[in-house]
Image (cartoon, rainbow, N blue to C red; front, side, top):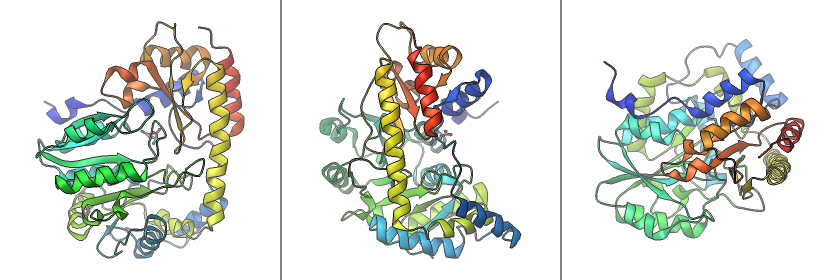
Length: 381
Ligand code: GLN
């Protein structure tokens, strides 16, 4: 009675953990959203936009002034030229941008290369669009396994999903790795769909490189980003996709009939966000660096094994040895007995590797993280 396509995925485990966290009064280090206020100036811009009556549909593919600002930012920060009239689509978050891109691109049975660990959404994105995901596990140090990547490509490969900085493992793909991916995409005539939502959250002088800026990639990349993480407004649901004219017109068609458009007053406020000075972005990364260190220390002290992320705001940690529990059981134990919610690792893996891991976010106030650290000290194994 239901469509076969919905048989292939379950509801978001990340959001399920948020519900469980609320039920148990736990500290929610599961879902990646800030528990601190959004910038005052942005909130005022949104409130004024409503009072000024930006309350009807904007242009389906995004308010003109916002697309112009996105085009400027793409040129200056991502080194990508995107014509605001024909190559930019404003969407309801990067989640919609990703799904609309997949629906615009994929025919039933097309192969899509996905690195593992991967962001939870890419499974359902593949299932709904009819893609067959080919998972390529990263090495233990998060570098690319070249042989595995090369052998994942074949004549059926239509797209590769890239997420840099990566959720959940915090990897920032290097220039050499992106060069290898570029060569494969060009050789096999493959489109890179790249989720760059954490592009400003980088540590230890890591640099963000957009694969769409590399030679040969301009017309074979869909670059996706948004406002949620950079401006701490995950509930606004404003994202965007940059792509060549043909791809964009297909993405726009899907987007139009899925959502008509993203919220008009909030698009207007996002123009204000794009006027923030460079110091805003520096401060954002500096703030998250402190939180990263705080959570890392607490997890190590509690017996988890983990790496310091290079970007984004998550730590993927190995469950301490000797618990006798898999990721699901341990996540349930943590939320109900320790009072800290995390996401079971299997949400980010096709293979068994995720069964021994939990993902924690540090996109929270320092005091929230410090309380989580106190609770983790009580972890008895
Ligand atoms: N991107 C956030 C995370 O990974 C929120 C995702 C979600 O709500 N599914 O936690």
